[in-house]
Amino acid sequence: MNNNIRALVVTYNRKDYLAECIKAILNQTIPVEKLYIIDNNSNDGTQEYVESLLNKESKIKYIRLDKNLGGAGGFYEGIKAITKDTNDGIVWLMDDDTIATDYTVEEFLNSKKVVEDNFSFIASTVVGENNEAMNVPVISNETDENGYKNWYKLLDHNMVKIKNATFVSLFIKIEAIKSVGLPRKDYFIWGDDTEYTQRLVTKYGPAYLSGKSRVVHKRKNARTLSLLEEEIPGRIKLYLYYYRNMLTNLSLYESKKAVMKKTVRIVIESYQLLFKRNVSYRVKKFSVMHKAVWAYYFK
Image (cartoon, rainbow, N blue to C red):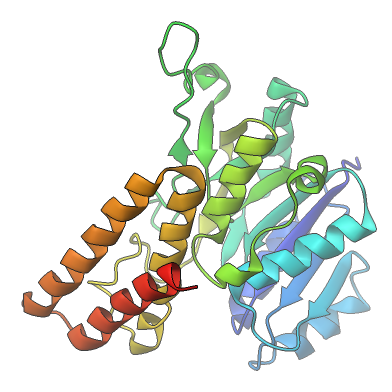
């Protein structure tokens, strides 16, 4: 059965995760049409591994980037490549540490039947390795004419309407992509998925979470992002993108008041961080928060 579903995986220096991710995609009860692998210039043997698969698996298309463009740049390049190759169908995208069940595609198609063609994307339910909740999307705040929120109306089909989601197993209509354009590669990491999914909902059509289309996200730290709790020195600098992109998204989809409120909160929290006990790399974290605010206002 061919449903013109093209899987897209962005990878960087996680060959073992990638191998498991690829295997899960190719083991679907309903096969994908093609698997695009975008390699952000890995140096851990990923290139050699994927190239060893190309003669065995004709479905794989491997694109190696000249430099690491981050998750945002990787998804930008991958979606651009797919939409050049086809004008219709579905893009199923994910990071390399996303492991599908055998039925992830099949259950997406069951959910798709419920809403017929009236959707921009459908997100899988994401859990961690211990079945803990992860990458939970924001529920839609749309209302019916009587003023009540209507996100729950498809609960009997194990679906809810959502406002935005992360790039951890999303099924996006190519027609919707062509309507709203590509993700923002300038985000580099974090927040690009929030912006893009909210753009899809705002400018194209509704989105849903499928309770039965499920994946496991093997991120080492299953907690929500927190600079205060971050213990890996090399990751601290990446929070510049986290805060900058957060402010950008608020400016695009909320209000100037929301941006100012968040800016004040970031600055206050940066000074509180200096005086909290048991906080590692406090000066570096303080600096990143202020650089992020500067990057947003003086971009």
